Amino acid sequence: MCNVNANTVRCMSGTGADDFFAFRPSLDDPDPRRRRERLRYCRRAVRLAALLGSPLVTVCSGPPAKGLSRHESISILHDTLGELIDYADEHGVRVALEYEPGLVVGDAATALSLIRYHRLLSLNLDVGHAAVAGEDVFEVIDTFAGRIANVHLEDIKGREHVHLPPGEGDLDLEGIIRALDEAGFEGTVVFELYSCADRPAQALAAAAAFARRMEEG
View (cartoon, rainbow, N blue to C red):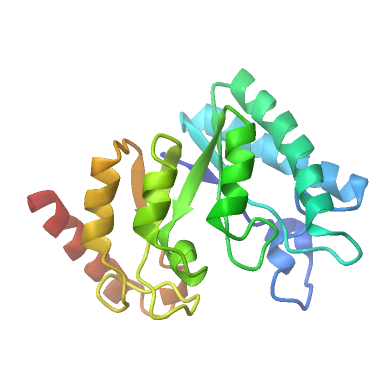
């Protein structure tokens, strides 16, 4: 068990109609009560990770909230993350932040500001999110060298946020793996292909073939 992913909370979100309902309540929620609910959820994820022997819990921010500036959201997130990181450290678990376009922490620059501030906070790098954000994935790897704890791998076509099996998009996935090696990354690379729920066997076969090529190369 390499990572307990606590990014989304569909079990708490009800049946909201907006695209990002699965991220609410968030760690930067303007409602203190809802924010504490999310923090309790993340603490349970930490305890689960410790129980399973996982070294890592991944979290993210929420979507922008009406009536709250981005600066205010980040300020709230700083405080909540600090509390969660301390709790995780007591349980021997690390916290990794994943950025995603459309959320408050939606790019590498914002994630970097938080990771530089919190000494024990790491990055869960989703290479597809970097591509969708219009970033150079290789520059992102270089910038976060030493602070990347886990990697989500998928292919991306253009800048459309659809996770594709290796070879179906435009990303140089083999080059990305080599860049991670050169940056000293020692964590786990995990395929994240939830967009392929209608063709799981095909997606798994493509991912397995890519993994074998990289191991042999």
